Image 1 (cartoon, rainbow over the protein chains, first blue to last red):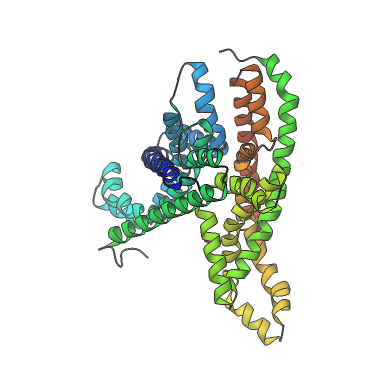
Image 2: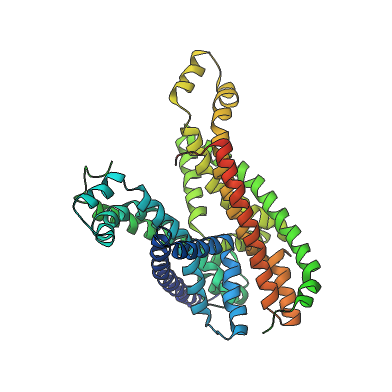
Length: 219
Length: 219
């Protein structure tokens, strides 16, 4: 009988790498989402064009291609990235582009009267955004951000192909060492699903917390 | 590293072979996803609680786990229990099942959007269940679904590079093999990216047209 406990340790190490990637990718994605999402609503044409180009480019080419590009092509133009850096960069930029559209949509979904009220109380553009629009828009964004985070978690599986030792990579290692395919792959499927459940549960409780005190404000 | 046009023309025929497989996989996967999605949506509406709960959980599970791992599962685990699939078939099944769980949500929203009055009118006219579905509900539910379905088929198209991991000779795999043969990554990887970008930009135009032609469903 094979030594399953040792192999399970390998899989757990992989799970840690997957979690690390998901967290770091999400942070980068969040930053890019707000930069590009607000950029698309900018008054200046140049910023709008730049944000649109970023979003269309990263949504238009697949995550897989972007990852390979970051890992295999960038070294030729003098930028060498470790697999982890390439993974975080590709995942963050890719999911950030999707989330940027969420940011834009949520901000545009805030009613006109809110903007008019901001003008009436003489708030500047930045003050209005910071104190009135964003606190309401964040609540609209949150559920979709949760979905995006799950998409990011699922996309991390791809980094195993650039030799990063995540869950999927470790499952392949276990498969090649034990010759058993069923056990490692079923295990990691369950772990991925559990992680996805944790994300959606976390987002839901965060949403409840943020919605507190806002009863009756939103339609 | 210089961009070499001669090299580009040299590898073009190989890449075009890959493009054909990519498109074939997308088309077959879309057909399968459309069928699987409908089956899931109908099963979840079933009055049989055991059936609707089981299918609902399975769909959640497939949606919460990475496509890459599912492809490995189909390609490496199923042979253990005697089902040996060619890579392309395994890939199409993986794409179809994964995106079927997404299209199921589109069907669900589309069917829910048909007003109650239509169901009641069908009952009042003494139509049986099959007649109600084929003559009343589906003709009204399907047109608004078309843009959302197309959206997922485009997303699926962008995931086809994953099939290279289970040795399907699609575009990404051809690009990787020429890149490894000549040790030149810049041209093949960039061309793959450009190909996906061009198709996606066209598909954005197509989507806008579909939305104008068929309208959008509220989700």
